[in-house]
Image (tube, rainbow, N blue to C red):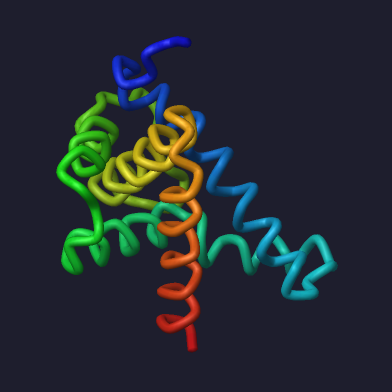
Length: 131
């Protein structure tokens, strides 16, 4: 078993991005959304850099993360990426990368229950925010 806690923030974010997106897509399909265009638009409310930055800020505010989880969030946020988001400023993009790193860390370390708990919280938050 590989020690995933040693992975750099961008590697964690790479996995976290995909994992989070799958959970969101599953959720949207379960909600009855089926048209690809509508699905994509709806998914953006959850998976865009702006949405992820909003969610992580809310998590920090509500002290939702353990100290260990915050460490992995910061590892992703502070990672030097050579790419940037199409629709977000650098700060937002880096905060979102931290969000994805946290998701990747939880997935790779098999903390599935915790991962799902946070994703459910995120889905609820986005729902409240978007009415």
